[in-house]
Each structure stands twice: as structure tokens, then as C-alpha cells.
Image 1 (tube, one colour):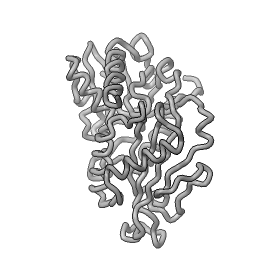
Image 2 (cartoon, rainbow, N blue to C red):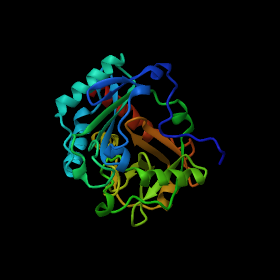
Image 3 (cartoon, rainbow, N blue to C red):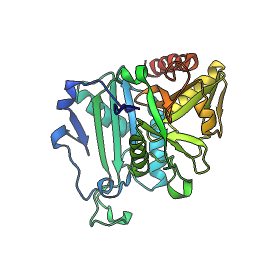
Image 4 (cartoon, rainbow, N blue to C red):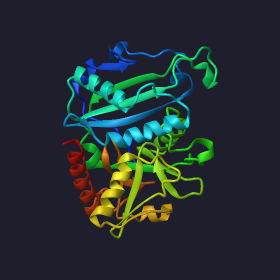
Length: 307
């Protein structure tokens, strides 16, 4: 493998992003002035939840699904967002309009437990209410993502059992995934392929993972990975279009021999996987007719949802 790195979030450069306005607790600030306290729970402990969303045709794709995940996660950790879904939508609309954004926009919505009285762990020390930050960027995935594909390396860092830190939390505590990404880079790959606690293929450090074998689409059981919105939409498309799809345990032996492989995520939608542990996937950089068919239907689904 060469030293040239590709990430699943490579985007085309857009000069408009140099002058963004960032939403911080109801105030819009220039990006260089948008800051949170060093006492903030998110900065100090990774105590918070976030969502990544995309704006198409002036509408947030699959907004309800993202809000379901955000509110469920915050409720599970007793984090009061301080606003309802309409309040969040109003804040998103305010930020998008202030930046003149209507299409090809990526948003990172972050909610933390807020500023702490003292620099210690206990949640009761956060008493001033949550911190809510919205960062939006003009963002189109780089063409190289689909042309070149992503190279994965299997890493020793795993997604753990739910009683340690449930991978279904889209939390600010991402050290587990950062370590996996570093391990993959040190192996000469672009991203990490992470196994579950029992050694079955699970997910990558940033995206959900699918393979195609003999016309069948396989992905992990979903027990030990972030159950991504795009992941769910791909499974939904397969079932609707009569493409055999299975959420199941499978091993690296089966992944290495896949005809196609791809990642799913809000930013890149479907991104082909060209290599796993140095082994080429299929004969066309991980792409194939099944992934292409799914990608066409996904684009149509986004268009329908944001019309």
C-alpha cells in the first residue's frame, strides 16, 4: 500500500466554508469566534451526543430518524436537550439561512451536558443547562471516494459489549474509534475494519460496513455497532427491491472473498471498499451492480424525502 490516505469524509474544497457562522447556544458566531468553555462537559469528558445530517433541496434528509436517535440517546443518559424537535429544527433553519445554505450541506449537531462547576466527572456538576452547537459546511463528497474506494485494515480495537459503552450511542466519547483509526493508518490503510467481541466482522471506525456475495447483501447483526440511518435505509431498499439482505455474523474469510463491499454513512451515502487487509475486493475496486443499484435507489429515496 502507498502512503496516500483517503478518508470517508474527504470533501471538495469550498471557499465559502472560510466565513461560516456557527450556532452556539442560540447565538450565531463567525467560525473563528465560535467557542465553548474549557469547563464544558463535552470538552472535558466527552459527555454529549451528536448527529450528522445532510441538507438537500432546503430540507434535512431523514430528519425524524435522526431526531429519534438523538432524543433516545440523550434520554438514556439523562441529558436534557432543553428544546423539542421543533426547537432543534428552528435552530437548524436559522443557521442554514444565515449561511445561505440550501443544498449539499453537511451538519454536525452537538449537545453536551454543559459547563461544569469544577473539573470533575460527576454529572451533577453540570448545572447551567446543555451546550448546543451546530456546525454546517458546504460539503460535497470528493469524487475520489467513489472512483478510488476505501482501503480497510482489520484492527485489534473492537466495538465492545453494551455494558461497557454501547456502540449505539452517537456520543462525543469516540476514543475507541479514534484508536481503531490510528491502528488502521499505522497498517497503511484508510480506515479500520472493527470486529465485534466474538471476532465477527462488525463495522468501521466511522461507517457501517456491507459486503455482497453471489448477489446477497450482508451486514453485521447490528448488536455491536452504531445503527446508522443510512444503514437502515440500505436494508429497507434491499427488502423493498427484492435484493436478498442479511443481518448476520460472518467472518473475515467471507469478507475477503466478497464480490463487492461498501460503507454507508450520512456524508458519503455508499462508498466502495477496494481492499481489506491488502486483498482486492472483487474486480472493480469493490464496486459492482448490486451496490450501484442500491446507490441509485438511495438517491431516489433522498430526493423523495426532501422534495
